[in-house]
Image (tube, rainbow, N blue to C red; front, side):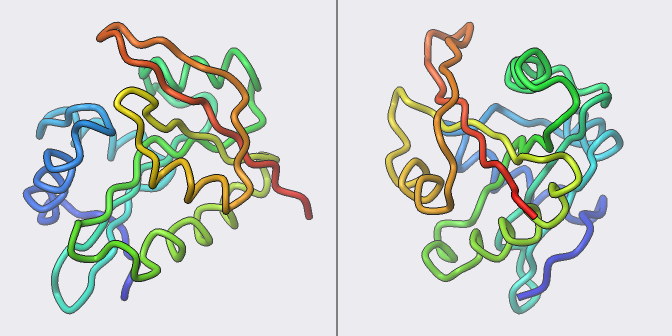
Length: 161
């Protein structure tokens, strides 16, 4: 398993992974992905035996990110967070430690910001993701009603030294 920076050559695989998980995350097209990669603190993929098995995007306060989630965290925590915008793991690679390895790396990167934040879909509920986040020490700090009528749990994990 290799965590490495995302390249333009990874775009088709990243877009396919996101499309397969669009019920739990926001839609993502080529132009939006290019822009998010440009402004992201981390735009990385997990490669397993030459296959893109997962990807992750994170953002720091002050970035040009325009998502409702990011703005909610800016309003809540100002500049003391690293936003994990999305992580998607291919179905064939779930429950094999991929997400755990990515979260460990992202949590290390988030230490200067005091906390790692993100969201999990509540309707329809993403129970596997909620359980994973709870086990990693995330707590719900609010709810966000989205324009499409769904609700997200806003999660935070404080990162002590």
